[in-house]
Length: 327
Ligand SMILES: Cc1cc2nc3c(=O)[nH]c(=O)nc-3n(C[C@H](O)[C@H](O)[C@H](O)COP(=O)(O)OP(=O)(O)OC[C@H]3O[C@@H](n4cnc5c(N)ncnc54)[C@H](O)[C@@H]3O)c2cc1C
Ligand code: SF4
Image 1 (cartoon, rainbow, N blue to C red):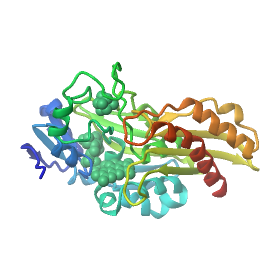
Image 2 (image 1 turned 135 degrees about the horizontal axis):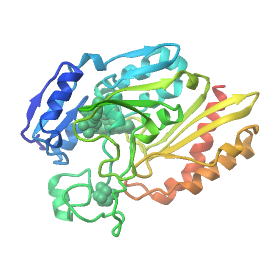
Image 3 (image 1 turned 135 degrees about the vertical axis):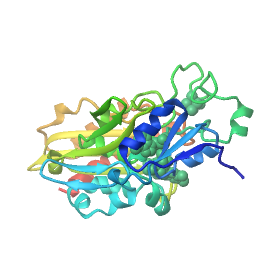
């Protein structure tokens, strides 16, 4: 049986109290929201904090607000709330869909959008017990100096595995971060970095407070396709999100993000040239091949990387068709 390590447990009630609790010893403190990722990782000895700050009582982080300018979602909003919210389903159906595809019902009841955005990266050589990792030899991400996936590599390529993040990027969403020096807002696309050791820009002492989706994204048609072994619970081994601006069957803009292949979601570039063209099968094939050429699946998760690569164009076309059908 795997047990939790010893730690001090803090339960602030406001964001200010949370920031004060984090400030005491930021590098030895772990934030826990729903705990669906953090708790298994604590049991595996992947996080070794001296203190845990649990966000569960911070009510000001649990809200969904829709107005003329934007949709605002508090970091503590659960994935279940997100997937069932009537206005989110009406305005951003792809976002609700992605939330509904995370894990299984129990985990969506506990798991939050903030935790989903900050989800730790995943790897065959990392998501293991201490005993397992010690026997093989530790790695760059925790306690070691080598990567078992890319032996000469200097950066960890563990897989970004959030279902919601790729959709938020296609919608042009922003994330608000609170820290000791105030609040800042950045595009979700800039939240991630390409090193799986810590694949986001948060520094110790900071927390995600809310996510904002601009109203202009309401005019976009979206698609989200997820490849996983068991549809009932598993993490993605490939995910594709798209958002299209359409006028009379012609694409006015096209946003495409492919993830679960490396440490950060990949925004597919070079698609602006296709704007203004009718989205027929030939154009969809061009988009799919563009994505194929830009994606390099890593072997950090236990599914054949070549096969996942071949599935990229298949899933891109499925996502595009889904968006067109929703038009
Ligand atoms: C069996 C299983 C299957 C799963 N399948 C999927 C899946 O298919 N897709 C998927 O996306 N996820 C999956 N997950 C992971 C997880 O359940 C979700 O990603 C969930 O949304 C995490 O949210 P949480 O609130 O539980 O995060 P927590 O576990 O509380 O935290 C996760 C990480 O985020 C940090 N964090 C949490 N909130 C904040 C905040 N506000 N500011 C800063 N840092 C914060 C924590 O410090 C921690 O590092 C799965 C988990 C399990 C156990
Ligand atoms: S990709 Fe390499 S460094 Fe990262 S967790 Fe896996 S083995 Fe460790």
